[in-house]
Length: 593
Image (tube, rainbow, N blue to C red; front, side, top):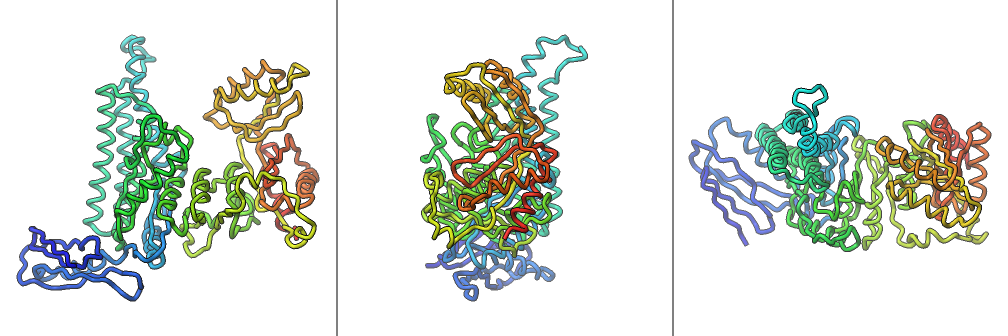
């Protein structure tokens, strides 16, 4: 069947075959005469075959020949319906530093092999603390302080030296932060978008989005709106919106038929909803419906998805939600692969910035990736692996480098046989099986900084279960998580991450723990972890680890090994942590055969 569409402006008409999702947009011309035919093509299943459609318009004036080439190039990249899906997630630093490389060398180049979905985090051109999301958090804090400013001003005399900021002052400070974000994105558009029309349209859209955020803040002040976690999510969502608008136009500028997809309002649930399996199932279905509506266009998806029970940022998901969004998209589309693009070649045997001899790992298991993420290596958001491993069929995750697109990266290969319950079972391999496959080395070594060790010695000599119950109830009251634990009947040692955001909670918990017994604290420590799924078959690996550290005069304050048998951890002085990691890597990875 044929599709006919006439546009009033410029006497434009387009005829195409029904397989096409949209006709090419042909710019109208003034001063035209007789119509002129030209053919636009769009790739189909074979790289050598094309589906085409014919457009005609009035003959352009002399000197307008270049507009034919722009129109022809505008539909050269799209998703072919007979290829498998790949979801590509790009972090904020990658979007900030390498946008042109992402658009032309990665996404566009991938369309010959796969259908592609692009998921973006908010832009960042430097440190995480200086990124768009961090600046939007500062905007939210200004907005939150507006209500407090109204209450506190009543207690101060006008003109006093310690008079707090007024609501108007706070709004002005927030507006300046938003304008800085706007200027940054408009400058990026001017630096990387080559087509003047696209560049101008993008700049206008960026300014409109930022103005919307300013107006939201003014409305919140004027009508005294409640500034809660939902408001926080709304403010933060603008970072992903701006990044995806930017990336959509960059792809269009590169000749890719891209579509901006905002997931902020795609989820709907009642007040009693929980962040459980039913929520993720509904999210997968909703994402799949929205992405399917793009047809053959390349979706550029906001990594921020709203209407999450409780809060996206302040709930169980937290920062790193873009990885989870990409995973849910991959599950919904039954993708062949989920790609997480970073600025490193993949996952290494140790941090390559601290261990010069660290080697790239071609593959690891999900359990190893989870351990590395928890103990200091920023690999993958913990909920991401849960979603792709439980998918049917399971979806592999590939970690790749935006600076080296041709590299193979590291693949996290789902193993449906090794469920969580199986991993907790202590294995007893036969001697024959051990001879067939004897692992030569662990998978990786990592460190986690900013650790404090709390030692609590009970002042009672009996009823140990009550002692432990009181200790953990105090930690729960102050929302403090324990990384490692070592216990005896009347003594417990706890390794706790003591970041700058937990200083007050940590101090209050320490004071409360004194009611349970004698309390001592070791600060400025680090957790050193040896990770490997096959370590349960490596006889003597723990002894080799600790003897190596002892030979190099590295003192151990605490030792722990989990029931999963894939992780051996100890606590060392933070000053010795990097040296300890290098020592273990040299003796257990480099020279071990």
